[in-house]
Image: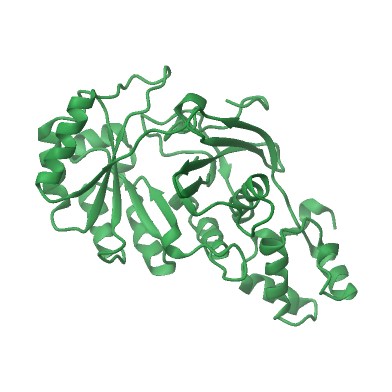
Length: 352
């Protein structure tokens, strides 16, 4: 069997591994051993799994292999943000960003090659959509960055995971959920639910299903508090409007300690007025949320502008006066196009 026809072990859940092993006459508990080799020891060859018998390794070779995405380039921003360009087995590329901030290192993962959501302020969508990433390719971004930044630790210096790189995670639902499950294995990458955040543009039915399937923190890219403007900025709103989105958010499991985050990009003279702030307060109502204000990361290919600091402060203070928890995110990595909405596939093998 050629490698292209084999299963990438990094893309198999514990249950799938156990089933495959049982299918070749091996004990199901061997799946736990394979998981530890893949994610704790980060082996690159089945032959390195020394506590498996030779016959077990030979049978594994027959139907599986250990895939590996290749880091083609790395860029370092002035603020310490690191952007990695990974080449996939079929030649496509994705970008992954490591954001360092005090005692936290957050890894921003991509879930698709490109994106088909078409948000007007996002460079990723402008590049079009090529294909979904497999669970193996999503998980391997964590493994490879951990190898680069600190080869001595199971998960390196990465403390948090956010799925808000290239692509809409809920548009790749099955593979994303499997990848999240793998990341959370106690004997694997060991990320807790509170250390993982999935960001969505608002695929309402999948938000409901996500809350039923797995426990992770949820962030919603909101950006407008009325349907007319949000539909202009984000075509997904024409299919799932704000009423549908808010209903899905109310169904999502949350506590006072882990609220849903609403990401609100501030565009000058578009959604940054006090009337916009008032509509946002009215929209949120009693829903327990955090508002993450993100001044737009300007780019010459996009027509939008960042508001002035006075307008940003006025907007934030209005929300605070109405008892909302508000944070203003400081843009990081903009000088290497690693900020929100700036990731995209390399063209002709060259980093962008």
